[in-house]
Length: 269
Ligand SMILES: Nc1ncnc2c1ncn2[C@@H]1O[C@H](COP(=O)(O)OP(=O)(O)OP(=O)(O)O)[C@@H](O)[C@H]1O
Image (cartoon, rainbow, N blue to C red; front, side, top):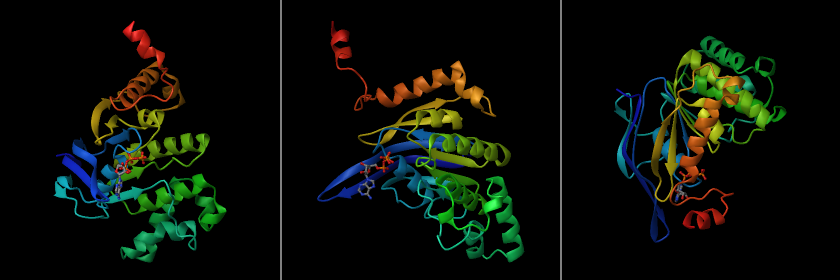
């Protein structure tokens, strides 16, 4: 049985007097421990898909199950990480990481130990008593990730988590995420705009198309883990990146931003 299963999932939003089909009949299964990335043009329904798995958005058709049980709302089995860090500004790093555990009724000693483990894991030990406003964007996002991990969900749903970071921090965060994933093997659904990021992280890349939002193609990424800088520089990586790029931008309703118009003229001639 798949860990997460989308079956015929559709979402229609009301739009004034009209409607907008954000997702149409998505079928997708994630096996336990998989790292699946999702790319696609803006507005193809990526966030809607993740929101449905998180239980934050109700589908208008079809269903999503986790471990065979229908998703009817948010739950502790699924950790959600968004691009905005959403930390409590008045709590320290430790306070933020412990917060959910406290709400869940976990005793102080265990709470402290669990929080410390994940603060260490994301490399924030020296900053455990710091307030978010004193941290860089990358550190705040690592704090948000530690908080999600500490709650110990078997599923991580990540929506552009590194989208606001500078390039170098982003690469570091990707490596750290893969390192943790390879040790703990949670099931990850990871949304990104970045084709390189999608290929580097995922064992499969789901390419979505817009109008209406749907799964266009699912591409296996048969690059071995652990992935390193060598992976990024390898011809196999380049080939996969090109394949995903073509799948994203050669969609019928999309054109790559740089595609010269005369290419079509040449084709005709
Ligand atoms: N609450 C809403 N009400 C109406 N329309 C919505 C709502 N949320 C999303 N949409 C529309 O549904 C479509 C899919 O949105 P969604 O945010 O899921 O796409 P996306 O692929 O994540 O986009 P992006 O990459 O730009 O974040 C878009 O056209 C969007 O305008």
